[in-house]
Image 1: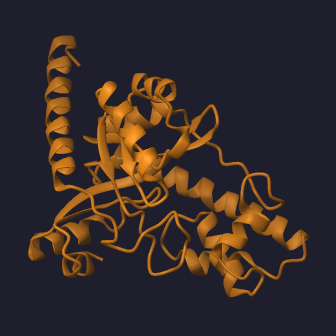
Image 2 (image 1 turned 180 degrees about the horizontal axis):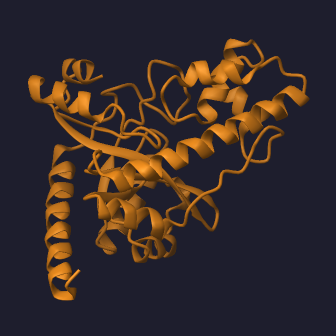
Image 3 (image 1 turned 90 degrees about the vertical axis):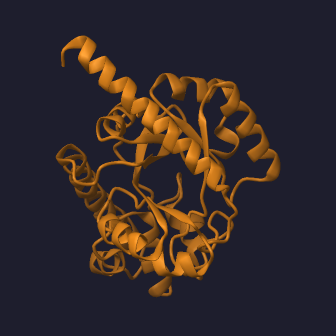
Length: 268
């Protein structure tokens, strides 16, 4: 991925796999060799009033035991959820086995996209989008609710391991009132540029973020060379200003200094 990003003309990438930092060390080493900035991260899920919020943890320390313990518990919950979805699909007469899904997931954190790919491979659906609209989307027959921590728990963990917490691909849900609540729960920034965001959505999110003193970010949400619909772009397929990354790094440095000062003041 790092070699391809460099070949695509990128100067920086963030590796934010769902509930895993397994590739961060190799990506960082490759980036150092090729002159590409690699931001260590992961994507976490939090419970909010309307459902599940994805949170990008940028600059996290992948070697921190607290982060790894949390991620392992989350991956175990994902595996249990995957098994429940497969059971529901089998009850609907869909020819799929748990082994089909785990084979697709490999060493990654098992999730609905892996079930969707297994459905396509089995010929049960024509494509990824149909897998969600027929079976896996919220309210569909094979959907299983995910047990999720509160947003404050996620942001506290990200901050504890040296990172910034940024809300991913909010779209129309990113109202000023909602983002104010998220900020008060520890959120540091908003992903304003995303393949699923129209120009109007990006402009509105940017205005709200600036008004609330939240950082802005962007990303392709690349999930590999598969057709995943309009919510994902090819690697290097989205123009994100490097100045946004510079601003995130400055905010992280400021946040870290404030945390150190707070610890000295409280004696913790």
